[in-house]
Image 1 (cartoon, helix red, strand yellow):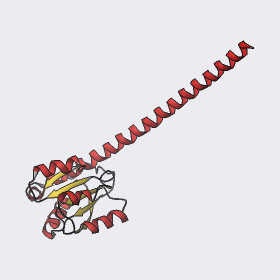
Image 2 (cartoon, helix red, strand yellow):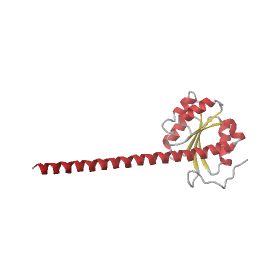
Image 3 (tube, helix red, strand yellow):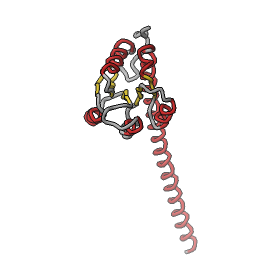
Amino acid sequence: MARDNTKADSPTLNRAMRILLVEDDDADAFTIKRTLKSHMRHPCNIRHAAWMSDAETTLRESTDLDLILLDLSLPDTHGAKETFKRLENIKDKIPVIILTGSNDRDLAIEIMRNGAEDFIFKSTIGTDPDALCEAIDFAVCRHKNFRNIKERKHQELINKDKMIEWISGSALEQDKETDKNDDTRKH
């Protein structure tokens, strides 16, 4: 059943969501693209890379991606953990959802503990396309909220540092003034 495309706005404002799909299997890539085009609540611009090296090139050249859909079994990587690790520097900037044909729940949990936003089994995409679409919407919103909280906490620390400097500076000025008064009284 297709989602009602009229109810929700894009979580990335009023534009198409920009997704990098990293998937080497043509049939899986076709299914995922078709699912996104027919079931997402907002339009998607999908860039496709079949190799991790192509994905890394795209990530170096593009600063406008909203999400990465990552297959863990790529021809130019050695295992699921290494595939995800190659995105180590990007996962804090762009949410990553893992796509896999493996039903290894322990692997899913481990990779999510290392920073993936979600983990979707490819076998569910054809039977429950909304699962992928909802995972994308939630991942983008969660990532945006986390980034906003992180920025707000960083600003709070800066403000606290300024307050401490001001108080310390005021205290130092008071100490200097007290020392001057003590020196004046002695003379």
